[in-house]
Image (cartoon, rainbow, N blue to C red; front, side):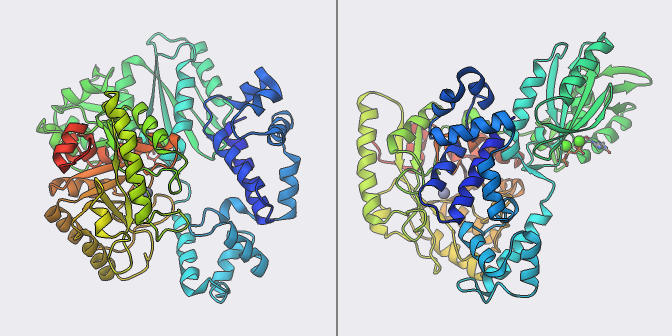
Length: 582
Ligand code: DGT
Ligand code: CA
Ligand code: CA
Ligand code: ZN
């Protein structure tokens, strides 16, 4: 039983209550769901050790929610949830995945058209019933149609960002099984692709392993708490399906083959095909058991040995897509990819002043615990009313507050500063949502498109180009508008944007949450000599760590430390942007 299962149910209870216009309660349930979803400890364990009282001690969990959790632990059900579900037979899980459909809209679609699932939604679109609804219109109908299409296309693949914590947890568990010497997650997960089809675990066991040990490993794997179905179970390979619907393979190999197997199963298939060709050319044979000369295994224990014997430098997994990395490794000219430890700050974070949950002090604290030397506060601006966007007055006030916080750091000799930033909205006509007089007072201005996606390519391009001409702009956030798993890019002439960025020395953001820029664009931007930033886009303490996903994206695009502005230390950054901070 998992924290995530409970979190999901609590969140849905919140949705159902909101649907019934119950005041306050929805928020309480959803807040509790978020806390539980992010809990380090297993809720099962908390309950075992401390009972109901332990549950009540979880932040945001009151008596009534704690009792429901207890009920779930004891019976596997929450009667209240089942009742709510019965009263309102809407398939929330699927409908809320459609981009642009929130609770309010889903409620109206149900009340007015009886739509309860994707299927009835599609039928309504086909017969154009949605467009005539008050405040929906042709455009919304079309958007919903496209969003459904998008959902269908991405079906069956999982977002790395959502599933990696589950994978890591299982990896750690596998490490603890008796007889297991090495564990590696291979396949697309190791290559840190944005989405993954299935997970490929690899375990290394000693060369003289006995059958009993392998049996134990396989038994443990197929009986993990996440398993809902055992697809196959053998003595070299087993496959399962998890509660999340994700397929996982486990292969067990002897250490003498571990390197060859990790190379083979990491892929990509395209990378492997070229490698095998090189091996053949050199008179070898390469497979998942090793590199062979005639029938003798000459390499296999580690990947480095195999690459080396083939005359190649070891290639970072993120680059193994046959997109030029093999040539670079033959020339011993692979880039030294940016690492998480290189990141010294973040320019994309939201504080409690807009939609975020932390005060400026708490944000600084979170950044310091990440090992950062600076943190740019980049709250939204006034046109984004739902995000509680800041106006000019708010920004000036926030600036004063930042000065106050920074003075404390200076006085106590702490090498850390908050930066006055802003995520300024690019308005429809390409002007910015904040006046120049106020932009001038900031340490940096980052700009974003958050609305009006559906327009012509020319209009969108001109709108962004005009915004980039504002003299205070230093970063263009999420340049294509893509949100991984939710929304495709808007139409825009990126070549023109890149040229302007180069001309004006504006950095392009790799947005961790959205996975925008994609790795191909990162490569192009790097080759053009344009700087980039990696932004977590965090709104909460636990989201600072999402910077990982931006780093993965940067690495897959060959980015090095020198390409990423927030790998500069505070002194370097002050010089680079000519900042006047205390
Ligand atoms: P995914 O699961 O769709 O996200 O992508 P991968 O890359 O994890 O693909 P998967 O799980 O089918 O296979 C894992 C690795 O095994 C793959 O990256 C390379 C290797 N592999 C699988 N099939 C073949 C094949 O037919 N030829 C070669 N050379 N390698 C293969
Ligand atoms: Ca895979
Ligand atoms: Ca696989
Ligand atoms: Zn943002």
